[in-house]
Length: 165
Image (cartoon, rainbow, N blue to C red; front, side, top):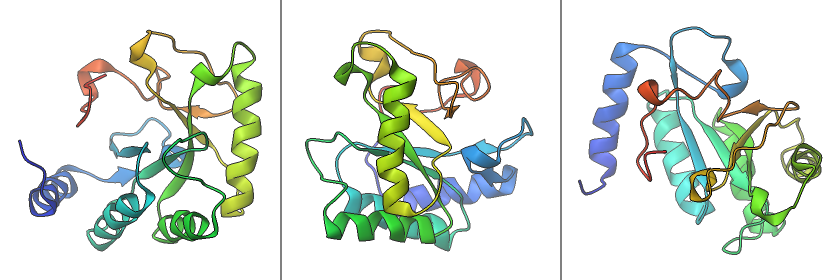
């Protein structure tokens, strides 16, 4: 399937017809759609998607990769992009690459979250692992709403546009 914003808009309209969308930090076990975006490559494209979702009244959580080789979260222009996404009523979460560390993953995630919190001027509640299926390693993050915890992640209810994992 070739991606288009028009087709994505149709998909989102169907989601709205079927139920509500919530942010990870709003989820309390109710039936809903949790839409997340792991921002690996491009904050400008993430903003474009966030603007579309806002226009369609779709809530999403955008997981930002602090250790990206492709964008610098601390550059002034990227700080503005991240805050624009937040101001569109989306949640900003941490996209965490555990392969950068050998142990104490939750503590390292807390440190990275502090960087993100300094950018968005609010607490980061949610976390999503970067490429967990590459080695099957899923560390636990008790300090966060972990996108891969059983509370959120059940294969029979999970749909991905990327690797399907």
